[in-house]
Length: 52
Length: 237
Length: 228
Image (tube, rainbow over all chains, first blue to last red):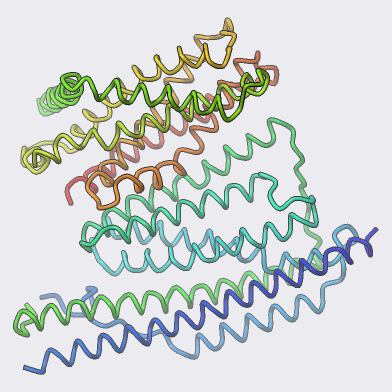
């Protein structure tokens, strides 16, 4: 029974790990990108202040 | 004018990169370790391994919503905009993990019960939580004024958080009163260590995500403020 | 002294909201008709098999009340918004909660009247055998309506003043009402069929719990939401 269950289950287990890692990787990339963009935006705006 | 460090108008303190690296490496280590060392369960076979992603994802979802609750209460009390930005960041990250929890729950349910969706208490409550998250984020996207957005989001976030245990209770009763299958399962200690390790890893990673998201929101707000100040002639108040 | 002023203010708001509704009779008639229409749509979706209709009567009834009632909530702020009277109302000294109480009571009366009509039609359309325990069902309906109207009136204070009011109110409100709807539908259904599992008591507790918690929470939160 156990080995039969294991056979059926493996695909789902693999899928869940793949999806989890993919989602986390995507979150990582997007978050770091967002901070970089926002920081650049801030630096621009702050510089603009002195531009008179 | 209050100094930049006590309001949302100045730039944030950046999250240390080392923390991010550590969180990622710790996460990868915890995952590999628990998958490699956990034996096949007698009933569930290798399906048991799903616990190392599904349970931590569910945990951080609720933890993130807890942060939304506390930050919202703090915001209503102090009107410190930074608390509102923290709540929003936490809601964004939390809703993503909520979606992940749902998908993982379905991937668990299909081989276990034969259906993608079984209307069981946990899955259904998580879906409702997801809808509450979405409502919160939609509200924010429809309100322009930062002060109004903060007040309204805080109220909605707090009421939503209060409702979470009530939703859980009512769906649970809905199931058990009609004697639909429930599967209580104790956790054998050999799996517990791996589980706790992964919960810790997910928590650390999520905390870092929220911090970075908050950092981005702070920079955006500071940029907004800086260009408003420049437009007004460069005076800061 | 101050409390009596609040009560007077509440009464004034209730009267104003209801008479504005009454003078435009179209308002109530439209909403009640909508409730009936929704019942018909449910009948079409589930019928014509009598058994399916019979089983689903409680659920269809509550959903019809929810969907039609939601229209009342945004409209209860519409009157002030159109005339710019909301700012004026807020200028008067006095507790904000009185404003909320006034609107809440007006909406309660409105939705209850609509419920009477929708239930009457529903009994006919869904061939409902009214049981001897019908007073209990009436009690459950009142508890459910209180829950729906409390949160509906609260969220409408925000949605009615935002850009996307038609979608925002249901989007925010429906997930929040799930415990009420679940409890009300389950209890109503149970009582219609003789409550063989004795579950209605538990659901009544849930309804009371929900109503109490959210009455308190919305009253506390209203001032933050209406001022801004």
